[in-house]
Image 1 (cartoon, helix red, strand yellow):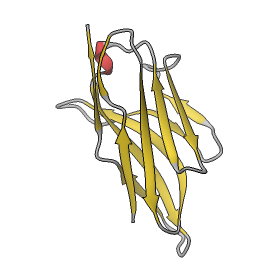
Image 2 (cartoon, rainbow, N blue to C red; image 1 turned 90 degrees about the horizontal axis):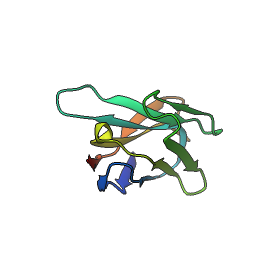
Image 3 (cartoon, helix red, strand yellow; image 1 turned 30 degrees about the vertical axis):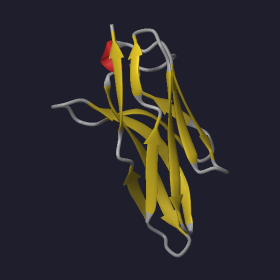
Length: 121
């Protein structure tokens, strides 16, 4: 099992910045692609950005140029720097990790509990 714990959400005014963090813990695991997703009430969870273990990044068009995803493989950590925030960025943000284990060949998907980001006018 792997646990993902997000932090860094909160309330910010439009134009402001926030930095989300996600810490992974467990035993005998390797983190593959990790990503940030977000969800608002009544809508499907959507990809914000993801990053491979080698550092290749991918962003939703709506956040390109404003958000930056990064990871620290030594710390099993994932980050999302969010700048120039807009009210439409308001959502619960979830950390996701594709995980493999030392004693197996399967890849599993894990989710954090989510952190609320609210952007006010």
